[in-house]
Image 1 (cartoon, rainbow, N blue to C red):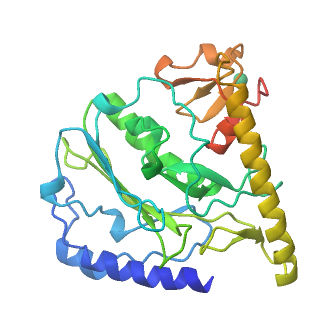
Image 2: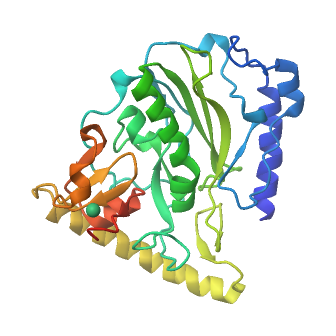
Length: 321
Ligand SMILES: [Zn+2]
């Protein structure tokens, strides 16, 4: 974990420099001087999927605040890595159509492997293609500038609750939320150590939504090499690691072949599953839970089960799709 600690130190300096944000009256506890000195010590991962940055106050400047929806994504850098994704989320740019396929995107650090008993999905894939700005917020599908390799733990336990909070707020109020997601890479690493998510509701000056958090790209029980995304069971020896590396390459190839086959096979199929974009569960269309689902949360998915799972969805326990 030496590399991880080094990364955290660098992050502290960056956030200290950025501590000059200015807000309206809504965030009463905000003080720009204090923000600089409090400076965002992101703690080592200690068992919580996320931790607060800068006392939970985002770094948006007054100039950046707007009540007009937009979304912007950084170009990939020379290593093919994503950068900052920034949006003003409003109802008008939220998705009205079901999400399409993203299985063809291979973000940097993509070394897929399965960890039965450690990753809470079936199959238990370590990595998901994580949307920086969640699909439910801006409707971006297979945009390579918005997809990073992230553990299932980061995707579901780390990021999803924050995305849901913002989506629910925008849907229920019609207000706008400034939303910025920054993947944090150490040096030339291909896998990010985590993502920082900042959010601030505009019309009510942060009374509805205001947070600044770091979500850790970790999976408890798995050791991850952030230089390239390789991974192994925690606590196994170096010799074992090499065996696992060979194994993970094989697994990766198998996954790609399987995904390709699935995409071809299902290109003309009707929707095989109905996923709930809010709860992240998916069902057979005949499941009784589907009748109770809000139409706006439904995603008529015509791909494979594996693909849904790799996007962070869980099979319903009632219909067992
Ligand atoms: Zn079901």
